[in-house]
Amino acid sequence: MWLQKQFYYLCICTCILQVQFVQAQSPYRLSTGIELPVLGGGLTLFGIDIALKKNFPSVVPDDTLGLDLQSIPSIDRHVVNNWSLRAHQTSDVFLRTSPVVPFALPLLAGSSSRHKMSTSYVIVIEGLLTTYTITELTKLLAKRKRPYVYGRSAFDGNRFTREAQKSFFSGHTSMTAVSYFLGAKMFNDFYPDSNWKPVVWTTAAVIPAITGWKRVQAGKHFVTDVLIGYAVGAAVGILIPAIHR
Image (cartoon, rainbow, N blue to C red; front, top):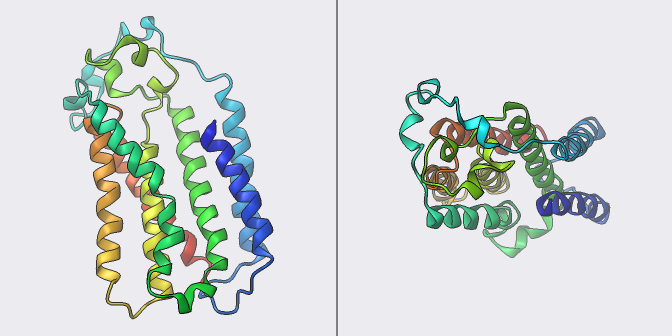
């Protein structure tokens, strides 16, 4: 719920502040034909997500009686007994710091270009909001149980909760990926001749991958969860700036 409130206020404040800036220097352009469906649709789905979560069920002991490891894809079976608080905490650090990246990364090339950045604030919000709503609604519809529900490494206090059946797909991975790929794509578009582009793109690819790996180590997600989360976040992070060129 904390993250939902932050998204709501960030979207509103960004839209209000946007009218104060001149967009002429930016490689991006805002238009009603894009912003209305993307932001409007995102906020609508955001509201649906909040409503669905009110009645989202928890995992109960009876739900685990018929669980069959053979029903899990072979690529995922080996992680069911993973459980690491340290890996979980590390992935949390990546998640919580990642939204700073798309705001800050394009500014690193120098103060002379910072006045170009106003339009990108809306693009960042659209990317984050789109990825968040896709991720959360998919979790609610899929109801895939997390690896630790199948194993015995986690405490029952973790196994029998609502969060225990929100495995597909990884929100930590998708949100970290969209943040880093948004930052890399905007840096690429603002500074196409920069020598830093290989470093920026490599970082954008590696950090979400490490985040996903930590989620698997923590026992929070299957390998397929983080692969899909990575793909969704990266795709949105590249496509949202691209449609504004």
